[in-house]
Length: 418
Image (cartoon, rainbow, N blue to C red; front, side, top):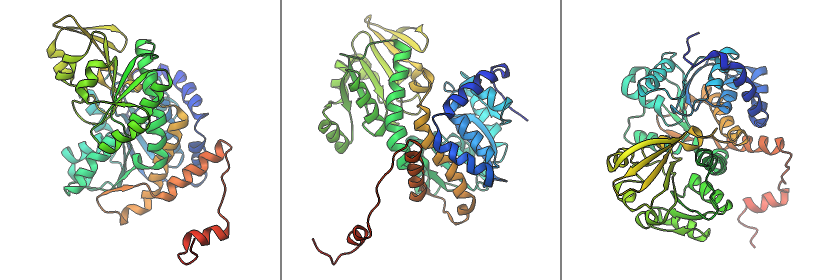
């Protein structure tokens, strides 16, 4: 078996952490039990480019239990947990190509290694597998049955490709499942982002002015958790509806230039490029802290910051100090990459339980459905989404009500009146 991980001697530690995460993933556990009996994925090759974490490990083990041939590479050079990668190779027999801190050349060589397995189905967190296939291996891309995309950024890119008739195989937008973006994006990102910031800096959030760029599901989560820890939260938005929602939720909404002058901690969660840039760095006060919890490391214009600074040094693990020409200091966390994964452990397992349940069921779904799918981006079928919600409720001991026949008739008719 081909693989490339840091150190196989870390495998036992990785196995213990994978087991710990599995305790909080009851939905995926139920799917794994069924997969183990029925083997619905037998004969399917799955190539995954995801964050190599304990939660992802449980997804990979579930896929293999279902009969799939699985290979995995990292979707972020700083999110790989080396002990987890080692355990997947050593204990699960899954080819993994991921080393924490790998350089750009190694990163893309690992993507190529996964693509060399000629997967029937791709799993992406940021569309790197799909992008590489389309740009470098179009003939291979045409043979892929379908893909699954985990992120808002990736889905936006893939929809643009589909609109331009450039998408070579259908993709299921796992990110858009209600059991994913309502919980993973909001509760997972909200908690894990602040976890990463606090681990990196050890600052007290109470009383600080935290500026959140973007009020989508991720921004909502970060803003609400920061407020819960006593921060004064400012939201920066370009969408009038989201800005109005933030106001109605009790947050202060400012333009980016005004916010730059007043913020202590800045968190970007937009998925767009250069959200924080030169004019903002010029306005920030001494000691301002910058963090990104969007997808790629482009939301903060790091080249501009480096050009404006007269020196740059590492002052703590995952904290770099940029000394500006006028003596101000600006601190960048985790090289501008995902702070929740680079400086912490990512989302809690109980949240990823639902996200990865979507991934597993989507692969099972496309095994037969791909023949009837067009080369566009689809949402997760609602019946899969609802099934995951039911399994999660049952796992945590929550029961829900059901409609009576009279109520069903009333809701489905037009002639009953008021």
